[in-house]
Length: 229
Image 1: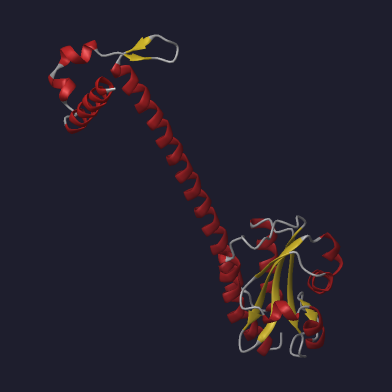
Image 2: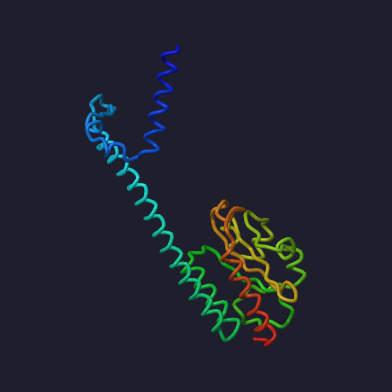
């Protein structure tokens, strides 16, 4: 028992010494050449070969991490370009119809949104010819009251009456939604995205993009409403 304990102590001393003197084998090549490490196959490989193998594995891990970083960077750059294009089109829109068209084209083409709707509460200042989904204040309060009163984007599976008001005839195909109440001096509408998959727009989904677009719409749309386009 004492011999085993002494052996463990000696191994510990050797490990500590080598850790503190990483150039030991360079200074003592005769000892280095005599070292061998058992391989899984039962054969022996030199310490240099073992170290080279470890370095190769580390290099592979680093290469994988770099590839992932490059892919993420490219994805972010593409997202930024699409967002920039959408923002410019929204800002350059001359009326509510152009704004809604730009929003619809971008969400469906650039962001692959399955279902989209811009619902506005019609208080007689919105022209009937607009492409927006117009609903009365009573309809809005009766069917989407919870969404209108929300402070942030609402995600997940929603009630049938909410889907029907927001998506109309397409409601039966919508499994989950991301709905953002639009607010200025008061709540004037809802921007809603839909997907067939009930789990697609879950509570865990990020809302940074839709919040950003929502902030822009909160500034632009009321201006068009006041001009009675």
